[in-house]
Image (cartoon, rainbow, N blue to C red; front, top):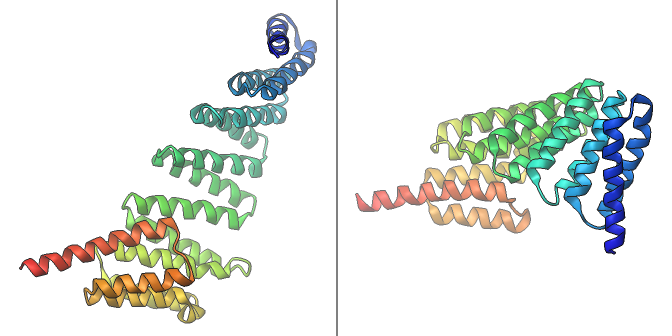
Length: 287
């Protein structure tokens, strides 16, 4: 095994030497060596070394003005680095995105730009996550991939809400609801977008007037919303909040969750609403 690993390292060293010495006509041979070395390092689970070789492979392709192949090599490098260094993976994916974008491959640029957003979100770097989801949404729109663009916008809205930027989140959720209502394949999702917006309204200082107005607008947007469990959930939560009935608020959530489990994002926000309601109840009891 050690002999095999040493042989793999020789591939890389030989490629490095050729890279520094050869002219344009020799880069294809260098690229083959780097690709062989990267594949072999992967076999030994030497992810950092494999990633490094893929970066060198990308640089070699760039010297041959093969931007598509260079972008693909950066993606391969990112796949390796995701196992050891998310930051290095992000760096490689950003190189790939810029290359794909530069040669008109907006679909590929969108896919990997969204992946960068996902990685930044996992690292809790929400500012960069939002920036990359916004850029990915533009790429997807360029490709007429409306559903994927909406997914990116949803991510922006969800992160904004977690950061307590509720008004921004509301505006984005309502924007995607308007986009979805006119698309037969996405129309079913309208109820979920406006539910998310309604939850953000409740988080936004418990402005019941704004929630009530929003519910009326959502019915105008999609008349079928009135007959959904999401509509019932919002109206019952608003009623419980208005009555400052913490037990009723909790019961409504439990009943809905038993039929349609709440995702982690909704759970976090609704717990905030519940805590606000509890605080109001305690304050009134003290007074």
